[in-house]
Amino acid sequence: DYVCLVIEETGNNSSSMLQDIQKNRKTEIEFINGALIRLGKLYDVSTPTHSMLYKEIKKIEEAYLC
Image (cartoon, rainbow, N blue to C red; front, side, top):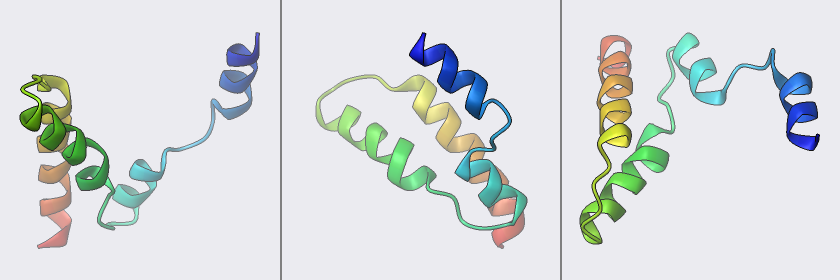
């Protein structure tokens, strides 16, 4: 019930990363997904989804941060 309530209450919110992209700011992708990718390499754990998301967000950032 609590999860459903949170979903209903926050459904119209925008994530901080989306807000960063909309305002052409550097995102926290390096500190979130980048950290998970580095830990995955350290412990020999595959992180394909995080790696894909990291690469896509970095492409978006590069388009406006250059």
